Image (cartoon, rainbow, N blue to C red; front, top):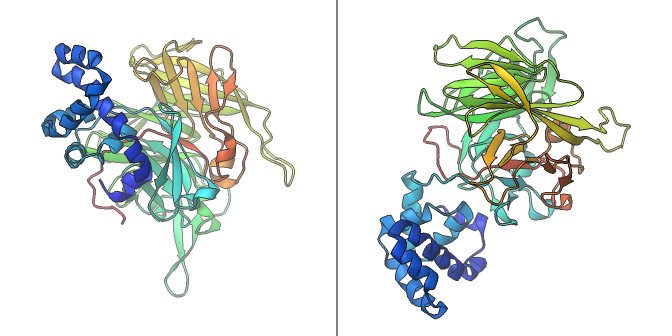
Length: 462
């Protein structure tokens, strides 16, 4: 693993403190792999014998160490990878061969003014602590965060160009230029340098409702970008990025490693997307669910398969895959909002409840549900997730973990007020994830699921 990634998770001093703890983790993991007799031995072993056992662990075969390490969450895995040379070899082999696929507990990524522009913090819900990350340039605090999926952040820099960033591995990949989006044209100065952007307001259903607007390089992102997602592309074995963008929250997509964005007219008002069985499902703010089929070649088809009738008030729509196979449609209801605050006043937006509907794809039926039982939701400017609390014991069942999803905070305004927390679906009571005083006012915090896997594409950025 690169030095920057090791340093980003934990300092060497604290690694030394964790050495005995890591060895005990490995001891506890051995019984699952080597049989019940060893389990009894490990449970009954006298503490004084622990050092003897620990001393023999580095001599375990590398394939056994790799099997053990594959059961650890990423913070523990990275710690283990720097304890002994043989452990580091097992760790790097596990990563380079793509064998580490343990599902991770989502973490909250945020920045802090005191840490510097190139640093971020990753708050682990499983450990109730934060890790300091060093991320590649351009500095993270100069970028907008417009999404996170499969361990990747989708960022927009000060020239309104998009990059994927893996905060764990420090890998960074440039996405196709913003000027390849249908509604964007470059404006060059007399020296041939990119100077400004022209944004057209035409949509797939009607002509432009006003003349094109001209934006400085860093201002286009305030108007164009809305939300983005990274999905495994089953047709190519790589990845695609789906972008919700203005005017009127339309869809475009690009292949990672490709050279352009492809527009998907004619619909608009999209708010969330998910990818299932080779099909993209997208929900609009009006409660319409559209399915986009990429398998038909250049002629991508878009079909509306359902429309909710009871969407009301201010809020956001989400679509998420449930572990049991259904799709969930979720309406985030916000109250106490002030869309047009007085000059100098803080923008206030407060999530008060969620309405959840189960959508049966086979029967095309929609049913409201009042309880998630032993499941939990992660909602915000990330890819929407529904997880089993049994598989992630550090999470609270029948709760929603939510972050800001108001474009005023995620893109345009720098504001210290945050509409985020953990909401109990039983009584709608809320609690903090971590203190809001820790966050800088930009970019907005976002959920990310750590992932060590890399993308093998030609468009990497140093």
